[in-house]
Image 1: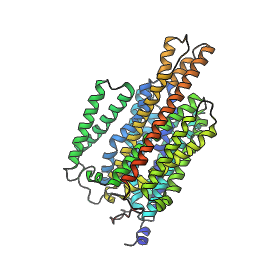
Image 2: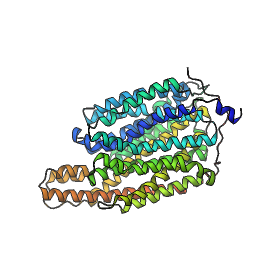
Image 3: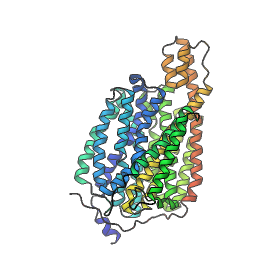
Length: 518
């Protein structure tokens, strides 16, 4: 079938794109909106520092643990069906999160959001892959999809700030419900189906092995970052996670219908793209949390002002992904575009190290645009490469692998870079003489704890404690961002090696057409 004929057989491709984009916007907005809500829910629920990390990480950990399973299920039952189920559950879980009365229940509700979220991205990307059959058009669609999704990450703080200026912290999550309801109705009416025509049975023993493997490894790294390497549970969970992952991979090579085809990792393009996504998100998510805390706590800005301040970085990601990546691929090739994007990001992160408590906001603007555009370019190329380098009937599983790495990278970035920030903060913090022991203990725990403790001290001493804590936080922020710059530079070196033989236009193999929606 020629290109023009195949293109004409998919009249719903743009409605498919629009619905998938709407579905993807919500979890991306939710991801950074939570960062704005943390200071507010901390006052109401009084979570510990560890619980704050779990509130931030529970969604990502649950999502990462189940992405592989959900990608395989989507290939078998159909990605439209799975997407609609996930959309409905995400809406319900958002309502539960909004009204959580305690930190423990909030963590549980965030985990349920992660379970629902695991159904969304693999299904969206698989539907887009099936709908856009021309390579250049597919690359542009993936770039636009990822660029606008990246913009949603920046819109999260703005929307959250507007809500938090007038409502309680739960409104940040409750807004998800009507958006997902619209997507559910439109998806049921308009989305075509996308599934493997000969899927085989789901290998049930592989499901717990993949979940336990990912969660065991992630929990170990999180605990090591938070409490050090001298905790026995770190080694026990790491050993259990690695053992489960090893058993999972061995089983995938032996069963007739595996959840993932391990032979995909023999392809340098696939492996390099997945690895690049992981390290890119490692730096990106941590940056979002760090700057949310910097703007709100260190500078004392309102949530809305802090959200608006971070928007240029998200706009840069949208421009880099949707506008710059497709033409640069044609001019330079995929490997060079990824390397260029990561070099720009590393440069942007490095510029951030001159930012202090009295730095003009305009000094930060070029750094935001550089790092955002670079990330948008790199992740568009790698996302499109992952989709195009596997057969369409495996697109759900392949997308799930890529998304697992991406979410795992984000969770690890939150834990590791957040721990770097906290370690430097505690090491350089010098509290004034006469600080009461309870206030000193709270101040050493976090900047938020320091400011809350200072509010209960005499005015002069409170100002001294606050200034010391803010200065220490900036030092920790600089250290974390230099780590981000280093990781981005390493990926810039790594990408040209793994992607050097990938053609500019990766043509999709002929596969069965979309099944029309009833």
